[in-house]
Length: 92
Image (tube, rainbow, N blue to C red; front, side, top):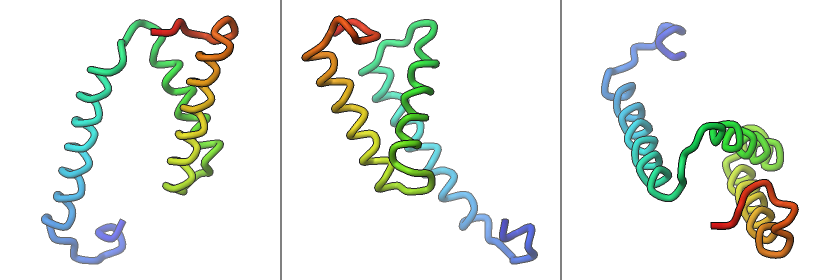
């Protein structure tokens, strides 16, 4: 956006945040692939969970997204522990 506005943006200033973000995304994918099993249809569940986290936490708020993720995670965990009949997935 700064470059489009006419500000001289150095390549280091542009490339480093992209590289850090790509590295963190790759690291998260490796950790998530080890922890979660991926099956057909799993993408819909994960997208729905991320939408709920954004709605609960508020758009554009990192602290809100973290608290929304904690609320959703605790709700799913307690739901599986105390009412497994009504859960959408089987306990592992």
